[in-house]
Amino acid sequence: MNARYLYIAFQTIVIKEVTRFARIWQQTVLPPVITTSLYFVIFGNLIGPRIGEMQGFNYMDFIVPGLILMAVITNSYANVASSFYSAKFQRSIEEILVSPTPSWLILAGYISGGVARGICVGFVVSLVSLFFSELEVHNFVVLISVVILTSILFSLAGFTNGMLARSFDDVSIIPTFVLTPLTYLGGIFYSVKLLPEFWQNVSLGNPILYMINAFRYGFLGITDINLAWSYFIIVMFIVVLFSINLILLARGHGIRT
Image (cartoon, rainbow, N blue to C red; front, side, top):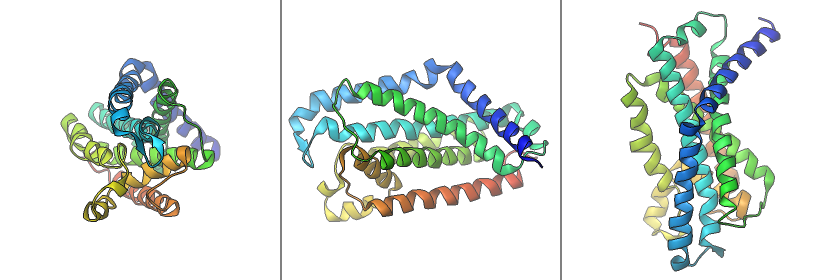
């Protein structure tokens, strides 16, 4: 199979995925921006002054990185999970599977679409945050690398959800009962160092904690978690989920009957 075919196949999937969420931006981009803006107003402007500083920073400045990354996480995940399950439900995914397109390329195409939506929403939320905070970038390389890796990770997780889901309800169960609690308990609104030692140790089992702290380091230069360890956790989960999804695609799990 030549490189030109692979490029065309990859490009086609990516264009389809990007066009899908861009066409209905009122449902895919606008809601998370409005929701995050409410967080800025309520937690930053109203509650923040009562809390004071967090690790030497204004409370609003402290929570902004976490809120931006939360928008990236939820939208990367939701885009791939809903898109792939819809393709299964409509049986249009079979057209791709019967083509000579390799599984890894199909996966890469869907993941790229999720990353595109996650970064798009994250960028818009970042622009909105400038109305509430005067953030400065401490380390641009860390900032960009973490947001891209995190978006890839949760796009992969969304693909797994889409593969295993048997109904539209299954697509929403994981974000509601797993993703949302882990995100809120991932250190967006507080430093993990404020917790008692027992709960600090429990929090270390939350992978989102590592991502938010690494992303916050990119903005503020502070982190509760060793930066190298954060990168290791993110990359490890990416490798594991990528491998799982390739196996599921190869077996046609939830697709072939």
